[in-house]
Length: 187
Image 1: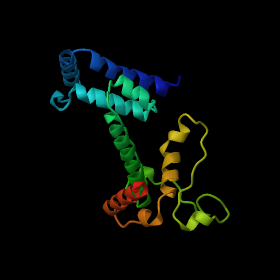
Image 2: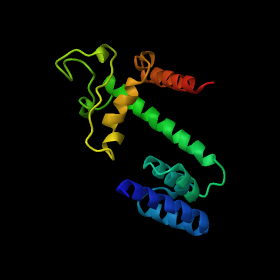
Image 3: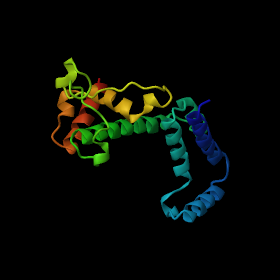
Image 4: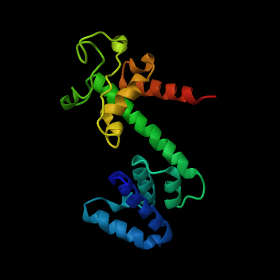
């Protein structure tokens, strides 16, 4: 089992413990721990641990059935949380690339991606170079490389319709992205 899976198992085990033990003791422990590191404990509860553990496990690719069992969800309400998380992660990744393409990020990100053009990637012309598509890097590891921003963001960006990626502002981009995603799932 990889390190990421082990971390997910440990995080999800906290969910199981939260549901089986008294929440009074856990709330007190949470309050003391947060105060010790200078965080206001009034903004957190044991529910934060349950939801946070599920979020952590989801981001580490834990199976959804495992998340449901360890979080002690009786219904499929946890699935709504996972759908929300996946759409939120997509939105952040798309917004990151949009901001990069319009130079709205700090200068340290200027060379993070490359557009597919003869100058940036190869010495020969490519069909996609006029579409503002991004060059997809090759990865050495499937565990981390396939999940990296440098690999996933260009693949996602290149799948967008040009009308979405050529939006005038970040606000318009997010709105057209949302509408585009909703249109994909409408019946």
